[in-house]
Every structure is written in C-alpha cells, then in structure tokens.
Image (cartoon, rainbow, N blue to C red; front, side, top):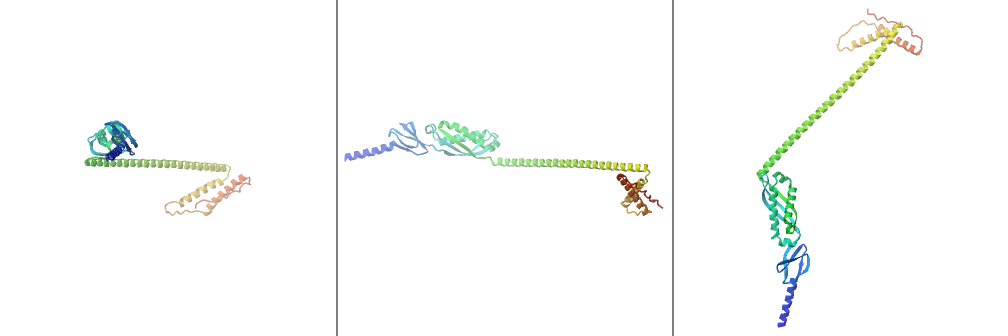
Length: 321
C-alpha cells in the first residue's frame, strides 16, 4: 500500500516535471525565460526544454504587426485654430527582451507617445498646411515616433492621420473663402478670354486690311499696266496713221473718223437718262466709213504680204444736211 502510494507520487511528480520542462512556442510569438526572476533567453517558435522549478516563462510577446487606433483629440495649430484629429498606428516588436523589460504596457506607451507627437507636429503648422500636407504630417510623425520607440525593441511601420476636423464656423469661413477664390478665378478667366478674343478680332481685321490693301495695289498695278498697254497700242496706231497720212493715204483719216463716230453713237445709246435724241444720220455715210476701215485693213495686209497695192477707197459723204 505504501509502495503503491509512493509510486503514484513519483508518477505525478514526473508529469509535473515534464510539464514544467517542455515549452511549445506558437508561430508569431516569442517567450522570455527567467531564472530566479532574471531574464536568461528568448524562445522562438517551436519546442523547447527548460529546467523545471529553476527556470520559468517570464513574458509572452506578440511578434506580429499590431494595429492601434489613435483616439480623437484636439490640437491647436500654429495660427491658433483648434482642430480635432484621430489616426491609426502600426508597429511590430523586433526584440522580445527589450519590449518585455524596457517598458511597461507597451501598447499604452506607444499610443500615448503617438498622441503627444501628433499635437506637437500639428502645433508647428498652419491650418492650410495641415489640411493640404497630410503625407508630410504622416512622414514626420513616423520618423519621430519610430526614433523614440527604438530603445524598446519596436519598429513603427506606419502612422496615418484618418481625419482632421476644424470647428464648424471655421469650415463655413473656409467655404466662403473658397467660393470667393473660385469666383475670382472665374472672373480672371473670363477677362482673359475677352482679351484673347479682342486680340484675335484685331488680328483678323489687321490681316483683312492688309489683304485688301494688297488687292487694291495689285488691281491698281494691273489697271496701270492695262492703260500703259492701251497707250502703247494707241501710240502705235497713231504712228501708223501718221505714216499713212504722210504717204498721202486718206484711208487713215477715214479710220479715225469712223472710230470716233461709232464711239459717239455707243455713248449716246448707253446713256443712263431716257432722253430721245434725233440726229439726221445717213446710213450710207456710216457704211462708207466702215468700208474705208476695211479698205485700210486690206491695204495694210496687202503690203505685209507683198500683194498689189489696194485700190483707192471711196470717201463716204458724212456731211449732215
């Protein structure tokens, strides 16, 4: 009986020893081992053996990345504007021993440090910078908090500001300011558009006047050229008639008389007034003048072609009774 009880006690003691000696560390965790209350070593994930009753597990540290919500708090900016701000914090334990023994309650320590630095960073910036430079605020907070928590064996991976809420009256004033700025920009753009339109219209008028002047100059040049050629033709005709008269040919005189005669009749017929003009004209005289022109032409062509001299033309009687 006594032997059986002793054996049972030994079995129970062995079970307790084994239970105390074998330690299984799960993935994502590190355990610290203490010998008589003093830190000895950190246990990584897996199966480990320790000395029972002499060594024991001190702290169980989570080595995975931890997310903490930064509660809302009020901060005063550089230009004395009161804003309400909140955020989120990500950190990870890199050294289990430092995280376990360098700081008490690591989550509260990191959270309070972050909240304090949020107020510090925002107090050094104007409200406009605070609302427009969210990335700069996050980067500055991350640098400061990560440097402060490095002795604790932590790595702050990210700090994000979720919301920045100015007071309602300040938001209304900002809305009015934004509306005024937009109206100002709209007026400036409208004025710029009117200016550009006026410039384009002036350029168009200038180009039109230039083209019109060039057209007028070209027309005047062509008209002068035409008059010059007409004058040259008349000069040549006059020279030819003068030469013919000098030779005693009266057909040249008939040519000029008939030409002026026909031109006068044309001007009378095309006059804009509706007057009736009675002139005692002889049809035979006009026909005779035209015949004189024909004889003069035949004579000129006959001379150029080496033909016989033209016959004397009949001088029409152009007298008015």
